[in-house]
Length: 221
Length: 233
Image 1 (cartoon, one colour):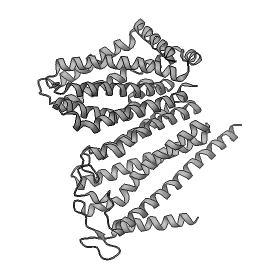
Image 2 (cartoon, rainbow over the protein chains, first blue to last red; image 1 turned 180 degrees about the horizontal axis):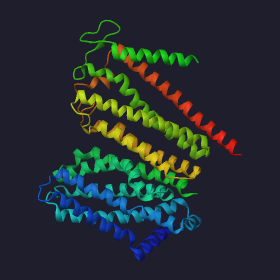
Image 3 (cartoon, one colour; image 1 turned 45 degrees about the horizontal axis):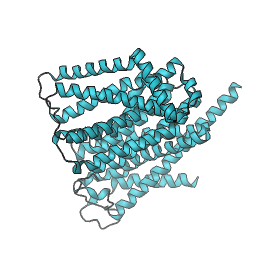
Image 4 (cartoon, rainbow over the protein chains, first blue to last red; image 1 turned 90 degrees about the vertical axis):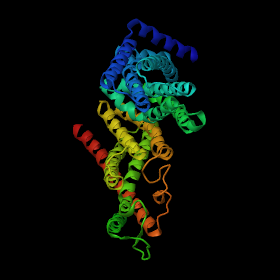
């Protein structure tokens, strides 16, 4: 099973590198979004709470512009029937999830790099907490966006519906991650953020379980 | 038939009691409500606001259960039941949001202040909205039923975060928040007996009303579909 998931993942990477659709769209989207924020801020001093919020706003909308690709492309090219024949639903989902995880991490590392370059208030006092938030947040983001992308691929009006469906699902994760990012800017120690971290961890566990349970129903026509 | 009369009597009692019974410092008669510091006369909204919020969640739970049932049985009637539950849910969700906002205007001074409870009811509204948007974008009946069932189940698992976890660990203004000391009695059920009685009667009456509406709603849709099929044949 893992071999097959890995093969699907490699196939996605290869077809992505051939067209570079998602990567190009993502990088341009990130640049545009951050420059819009920078223009609107001007010479204003932004405090660290607002920076943390803006950071997750850019992450959310970048994810919404790039992560639906994995399933929508299959549906558009008509290759989903072949995939249904050669692999079980779990295998397909694992392959797509790994692909989206890699894409999310790539995207968010770029965003973090740009933020640390352009925002003075993006000053992390507790790097360990920030990295933990970053990793857990990205995993949650990738899981939820993958399962919603598979729903979206079957529906009409794909582009506009994706953020609409994902936002309420991602809201608990994003709100907690904004809170955790603010804490990491303030240099709060680990003991006092135990509740927030456990929310993010339980969110990830719930989402991955639900996704694997329900993907069968979405995938089979 | 009897339960319709019972419902009428209960609803009338709740409306009269909830609006007209006085709030006094030291309640002695059976019709007097206690004075709760920080809430005062505004406390009466509990008889109408809490049941609507409760029904918004009940409707959501029903939609979740019937979605699971649909995925197991693939019986289109279960999908219709989930659909009607969500239709009623969005109505009660809007009612809860509006009554809450009106209450907040007098209790906190502003209609909207992103209190954790307000955030969570807003997220619930968004979920309902997204669910109907998803439904309207799919043509085929079976596909629509499957995908909206799946979304309803996924969305249901995020609801506990909004309703039960976040309002309790985040500081807020709503009675029952983490740092709440003055107006705690409502959630801890420290209201006096009369108030509790009217409150629970109101909850029961609204729940009966909900099930009645739900019953009528899904039956009318099922009959309409049957008629359509007969006429087209």
